[in-house]
Image 1 (cartoon, one colour):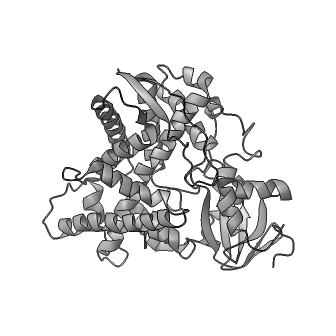
Image 2: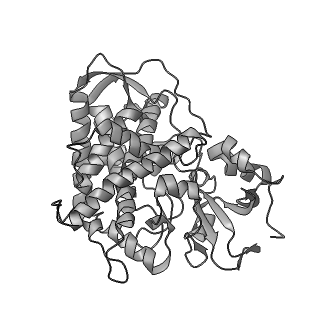
Image 3: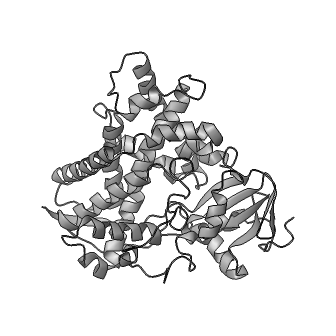
Length: 416
């Protein structure tokens, strides 16, 4: 046991996590007046960390590992089995480099163009008498963006069905019962689809653009100089498509922010890219997306008088770190201007995880997220006129990912 580490009361807090969701760690930080405490999850001793200093500890790859940290239900829905999120050391560096090689300025410009193109096409084709659920619309638009960018054709696909299938992967990990099993079924179907493409590229049946992720991942070699197992290559290609589609959650939160903070929204008319980016960064900080990152202690060590034992499950509170009063002035206030001249570190702003991009576990797709959100915000503010009908804008903190209950309904009136 950790003799000095603050401890959560009671025996097992699995049900509390399901009930409190994003606020579970924050609630205990306040109750115990601490940034680090010990609890039990699924009967297992678990350490919870919050704040930039604790995040820097958590992303020390000599002290923490990822290889056996993610629960099986998350691997079988969200990440897939054998993906980059569960690797450590040289194997992780090799696989991460495969992702990072795609993230250059040319790629970001293309992502921006595709996002603008598919939003315009979506609203050009709607019935203007219809009400649009922004969250569901984003799933369709961003699947097209993702597949176009990675080189996967949707020509023969039912796009709405595929969009629903991919969204099941990130809507189901924290769910219980039918919804979770629906996510597993969708994972299997999506992998069958993508694995057929990977194998088609390898055997010459499918001609793929050599600059696209479909080809790059299909032909990527591991540390032993061998092609990735086709199943692993499949998982990794979905680890590009699925997160781009999951930006739909933040698109919904952009819609919510425009509604809840009209004074900030008014400043976006004809705003420059920097001002648009302040707004979407504040959306990423203020509203929930990923609740926690997960690791296990890799070696016994002591830190600030606390003992960390090898194998101990450890959770880093992403949502709480982005609202931590040591790092943020008035964290409960929505203020995009806080990002003007702000200095980001790898640990103080971590909506998609922290650490370094190249050698750590920070999300390789964070650049894409920022471009997609900024372009979507510009479209909604400067290229689409719409009304906002009465609806339920609230969301549940134990619903992961959190999305407003009515999925942010808008009534489009004109495309500019």
